[in-house]
Image (cartoon, rainbow, N blue to C red; front, side, top):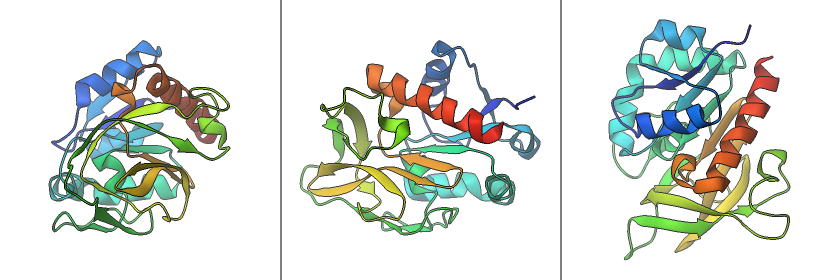
Amino acid sequence: MKGPILIVDTGTGNLFSLARSFERLGRPPRISRDPEAIAGAGILVLPGVASFPAIARGVEPLRAELVRRVRAGTPLLGICAGLQVLAGASEEGPGQGLGLLRGEVVRLPGPLLPHMGWSPLRRTPDPMLLGLGGPTVDPEMYYAHSYALPAGTAGTVATSFHGIEFAAVVRAGSVVGVQFHPERSGRAGAAFLAAFLEWAEGVAG
């Protein structure tokens, strides 16, 4: 039997709004920071809405178990700061990321920061993204951030733009990271979460 969806409580993030998004898809998740819960999860989710130093502190006690599970093939979705902490470091401040993605998080160019609101998602023909918007129309996704991984980050399958082009969706093995907030991105965000779950359950199964 596949394990449950677990939203990892790092002491940061939009936990309950994100949980409701999964509930609307008929897949209510658990929320926990217990390493034993991480060990028993079928799908892991790292939520956003935090600075890099804050989320790095939050994942530190869970680092060994998170990395072990990902290396064993457990699907993990990182959202916003949850994507950024998958990398090794950030210009935002001190703290060690999980090192599951290559590259360093950089500050977006000012002066209009944070990048907050709707921006189009520039997709590659990645199966997880095909159902968002339409075949020729880039879906609008909701962002709230001042830092991001560069567009050239290995595994980038979609980008967006705010002063510079940045990585909006990154995939590497069983890891998927998104800079936007699917729980705040309307139908396109719900479609992304559904596509992620379909993919993740195939990986976990």
